[in-house]
Image (cartoon, rainbow, N blue to C red; front, side, top):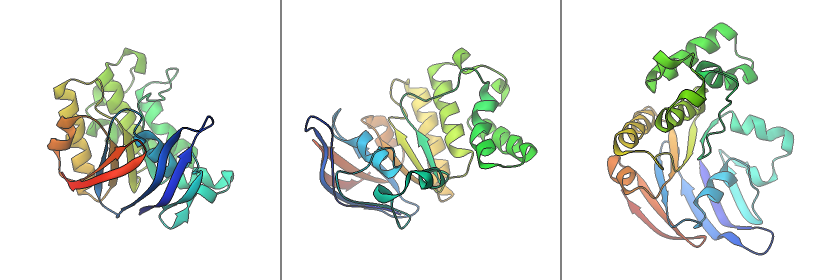
Length: 221
């Protein structure tokens, strides 16, 4: 599903976030990206979602060279990708269910069906009783659950998560990893960047270790 072939990402000023990185993630896999802060984990995820473009090398997702996709094609790529990033990007002028239903509205799904699917995934993450709440009133763990619900409501084939258990207590972190395990078991491909050792031991999967932009280690979780 995902292939990196000698991918380098260099930012203005000369900083190399990734250096000649090669990897392959098969459909249905669960893969963890580990490494120190600044190792290149977030950049790798952004390259997969075409948020960033490689300086050199080829990034392929579902057979498409995403580094060469025209701008107009990127929204169609992302319809099959769920994104969970550290800053959440929640809309605080909309309540919980309106945040979750937004991707379905953008995709043009019938409103009644969209609301039905949104409620189902909100229930899955344990927020159904708070569907009318504003995100600002939610705890950090609840906001993370809301972000995950929004990422999964479109039933993406691929989920990318950047530090999804960062700054959460052990109970919330365990609940979120259990949710990821459930979605993986029904066929979703997951790539999760984390430095949280609890996450690595909570579920199975493969671990790729990044060190200063280089993939230096691969092992089974």
